[in-house]
Image (cartoon, rainbow, N blue to C red):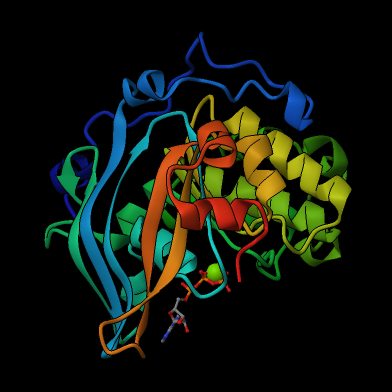
Length: 302
Ligand SMILES: Nc1ncnc2c1ncn2[C@@H]1O[C@H](COP(=O)(O)OP(=O)(O)OP(=O)(O)O)[C@@H](O)[C@H]1O
Ligand SMILES: [Mg+2]
C-alpha cells in the first residue's frame, strides 16, 4: 500500500489531547462524569459512520440494518444478550470479519469519511489504526518487551523502540509493575497484567481507535477496575468501543451505549441481531425509549 492510499483512509487521525476532556474519576457510578449531553458528544468528530449494515455467515443473516455513528474521544459501549451479534459488529470496525471465510459484510462503514471497505484500503493498515483487545488476554509467547515491540518492528521501526515500549507500557498503566522484568515471558504475568500488556501492544502501532470485546470479563474485580480506569484515561487520546456483558461496567465507563437485541425473522425461525436503541448511557439506563431496552436494563429480559 502506498503512503497515499494509507492517507486516504485517515487523513487527520493523530490522537489529540483535548484540554477539555472530562476529568478522570475513581470508578464509582455516582462519581463518574458521564453526563455529557448527547448534543455535545455529537459535535465531536465522527470517527465511524455505519449505515444499513448487514452481516451474514454463509446464508445465516446475524445482524440486520445497523446504522450508528461513533464519536471521537468517546467511550461507546455495545450491550445486549448473548448471540445478538456484538462481537460480529465490533469486528466490522477493523475488518476482522475479513479473516472469517464465510462472513459477508454489506452496507456502509466509513472511517473519518472514507469507505473502510474500499478496494484500495489495506486491511493490515486498518488494523494498525484501529487496534483490538479481546476477551481472553492473548499475549504472544515472547518477552514483555517483545510483545509491545512486535507491531512497530513489523512496521519497520528500528529507532526509539525502547522509548516507545516504555511509553505504551506507561499508558497501559503497567510500567511500574514490569519495568524491572521486561525480558520475562509475558505468560508469567497475571491475567489482569496480561490484558494491560495486550492494550500496550495495541497502542504501540499508534492507533486512533481501540476496540475492546469484553476486555474485563475474565478478570477479577480489582483488575477489572484497573481496565475501566484505563479506558477513562485513554479516551482523552483515543476513541474506544467496548462490548460488555456487564451493565454496571457500561454505566461506569461509557458516554454512549448501544443496545442490541435478537429479532425473529419473517419465517419465525431465523434470528438476527438488531440495534434497538443508541443514546447517552444515562438516558439509556434511566429513561429508555424502547420497551425492549427497558426490559433488558431492568433485568426483566427473557
Ligand atoms: N465464525 C462464525 N461462523 C458462523 N456463525 C457465527 C460465527 N461467529 C458468530 N456466529 C453467529 O453469529 C451470531 C452472533 O454471534 P456473536 O459472537 O457476534 O454474538 P455476541 O453478541 O458477541 O454473543 P456473546 O455475548 O455470547 O459473545 C450467533 O448466532 C453466532 O452463532
Ligand atoms: Mg461476543
